[in-house]
Amino acid sequence: MQTHQYDVVIVGAGGAGMRAALESSDRARTAVISKLYPTRSHTGAAQGGMCAALANVEEDNWEWHTFDTVKGGDYLVDQDAAEVMAKEAIDAVLDLEKMGLPFNRTPEGRIDQRRFGGHTRNHGEAAVRRSCYAADRTGHMILQTLYQQCVKNDVEFFNEFYVLDILLSHDLVGGAVSDGDDVAVSGVVAYELATGEIHLFRAKSVVLATGGAGKIYKTTSNAHTLTGDGMALAYRRGIPLEDMEFFQFHPTGLAGLGILLSEAARGEGGILRNGEGERFMERYAPTIKDLAPRDIVARSMANEVREGRGAGPNKDYVLLDLTHLEPAHIDAKLPDITEFARTYLGIEPYTEPVPVYPTAHYAMGGVPTNIETAVLRNNTDFVRGLFAAGEVACVSVHGSNRLGTNSLLDINVFGKRAGLAAAAYAATADWVDVPEDPETGVVAELEEMRARAVGDRVADVRRDLQQTMDANAQVFRTEESLIQALKDVRELQARYRNVSVQDKGRAYNTDLLEALELGFLLDIAEVVVVGALNRQESRGGHFREDFPARDDAAYMQHTMAYRRPPGTAAPSSPVSSDAAAAVAATTRSGDLTPGGPGSSAPGTYDVALGYKPVVVTRYQPMERKY
Ligand SMILES: Cc1cc2nc3c(=O)[nH]c(=O)nc-3n(C[C@H](O)[C@H](O)[C@H](O)COP(=O)(O)OP(=O)(O)OC[C@H]3O[C@@H](n4cnc5c(N)ncnc54)[C@H](O)[C@@H]3O)c2cc1C
Figure 1: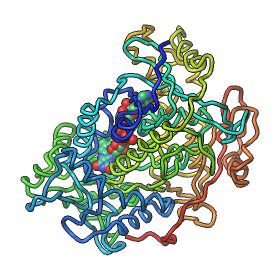
Figure 2: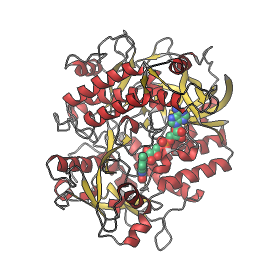
Figure 3: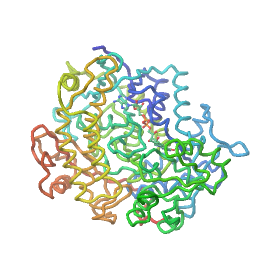
């Protein structure tokens, strides 16, 4: 085992990780650890844009942006965080411009802006042009720009290193320190892909910037690598996950494939039509129509299909119509995504509408943080030295439904904040001892999988997981479907304990690491489903057919999900007393064996739920109409 020592270790080299690295490497000895080569991170796949109330093309201000974010998130947004993000958005865009990002320009030479779902003028009057963009390759440009700056600033990268564990000074159970009164981070354990060697990184500050978990679903816009690693690692160490039941389904995935066609297509004038050619969004959102927030558009599409108005031979998708746009306009503003339609579906978007259907896209939930990106271990206390930013984190600016272009913004604003906070903490903190044998648990697990001669195949278990999540925990959910999903996930967890890998070697053993990632996916799927089962209301991305209304009295609260080791009591303090009721609610339907919540099947872990209040500053919850 090799040992390294840095003041700050950043896990993840996507937009959030590299934005953090730019700040922290100026101020503290910093290493960035990434399982991918940095420019392969999913940020590079982002298409449509990054919003800020620059008011370059029409009147706008950050207060309208804050309001839209809060309303878009169906009032589960922490309003102090949304305000920070909307205010700092303007500098975040200008910072990128100064770094050299080639934004599209207006004829006068200003950064151009386009429309995106849910972004409005004056609290919902009409759609506003708030999204800054570089054609439909905005994320690619952000990632390349940040990487160039990191190279210029001599940031140290450990590429193709997989972080396997976060090291803490004390054990956490249900958010409480089980063997002391305080807990601090002391580093991370990582696996070097090229050699199979284990590395220990000691650090005063650790920043989690590991991105999302879209691979719990089969139909998804997310890259193969988005397996929720950072979320699962934190969760396994006793840190709660916040609001995981809220997963965003983006309306316009290529039908049957899930590959994304950016909302920019509608921002530039694209229209959704059902099989009868009707512009159906006029019925669901009369004011902003096709530019309603994603949860509403995705549900409306699914509803058209369910009611028999879908398009195609099986009436199982709707159509994205760009045929009224000038080909030159399409080529200038939407070159990549129209090429996707040609390549993957053989459709010519100039002349034919494109078949689309909702695709799993974005995790609104994640590792809970405050607005300085410090990681919470319960409603009030922190893990000293641990920070999180980007899709892995839940700060919570997106509440129960993220607005388009708010994530590229989130990673820049909170990535920067994380870099500053991590460096500031490291400047005064003492080193924390690492455990005597830091590699025992994870490494043993890896070796066991490598050594197992026969067993279930990783790809089979993953496929079954993705299928049940698509079938049972997607746009529409019911108690029955979620119980089915939970049963399936439990069974798959049992099968997972028996998986084996074909490649037994050390060098570039991606087989082994995919097995590990499957374990993360199973943990995350379980938390998503238990949270969804418990939340008996519909809000944002979470729609319960059996509870179709939003219920602010009971559920205008963040869910905090804790991993509860077998045989231990539900966390008492400071998880609210509702936690017990919440957990009971998930067992209410009786038999969820094997290993349902509250059951004590050997070796399985329960999910214990608590609540955290939503921060409300200026906007009282209202009915959401568009
Ligand atoms: C197709 C697509 C289009 C999108 N378009 C837009 C858009 O137009 N506008 C918008 O605002 N948002 C968009 N989004 C969402 C947005 O791109 C993402 O939410 C955001 O880029 C996530 O950035 P991140 O830095 O948090 O994570 P990522 O960019 O996903 O980076 C994660 C990093 O973590 C590393 N990592 C993960 N696990 C480990 C581990 N175990 N050990 C070491 N390293 C690890 C990876 O190597 C990677 O470097 C889009 C998303 C997709 C999928």
